[in-house]
Image (cartoon, rainbow, N blue to C red; front, side):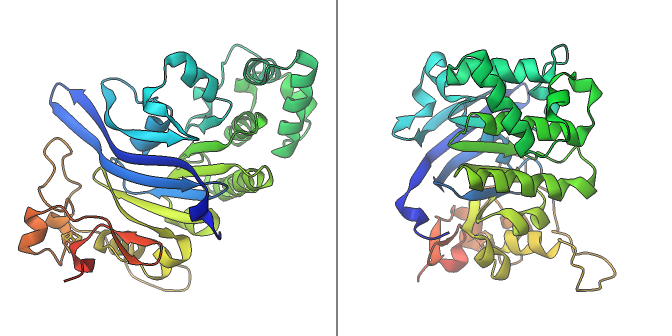
Length: 327
Ligand code: SF4
């Protein structure tokens, strides 16, 4: 996407999100800076526990206890979301910013019919009457290509398959024509054969209504197919950001290189896929300096001591690694 830089929708600055557990303070997100542009599909990727879901939840102030945003800002259209009251946030949630969770049942009430609960959301968020809300809901269900949408509206969630439920949830997420959709591993619970189809559908619908999507995933294959840009997270830091072509064709950070080398490819036959050596570090006592240094084959004394800054190594391709610092 061109000229994205000119049109920032969301700007995260120096964000710190911690969980206060009995074992200690888990620093899930530490000093993250990230811009998200109007109309783009941004993939937020990394291993489990890297902080990507916490970062996504922070945007709508949905970090579950014992977690909380400790410092930093999240500017959305001129307003800092970290400083809004509950009422002000409720105006934005579900209308200007919507969320798709891993488990579709997190967004659906099992005791109400699909249509009734979707209509309620649209009436409440868009302040339209029931008849208008019904039209909006029906159109959204048609858009996600559910067969017999009129009939689906009369069903209860338990009467639909996982794939159909996720389509309903996508319909809910786009029915208010939000400016931003945050999708947290939206197809993880589904059969692999329908994962790609559902993600492509989400992206296609988002593009039709010019909605920005933050797609949280660990599936690099999916990212290559649907994203415009990629932000890679490791141990609470964003360590590489760039457009999808640059990151996939020329990854810069040693961790991103490792992550991509673990992705199976149909054009190359290998006996076993490589893995990244070592363990994901504890976020209660993260390693000093570069957090990847215990696993990095290029680690130097400086890496063990000093945290690297984010460096624009190539135009619009940023990396948090001392290897790219100008001497
Ligand atoms: Fe490896 Fe050093 Fe770069 Fe970290 S800063 S990724 S340890 S070379």
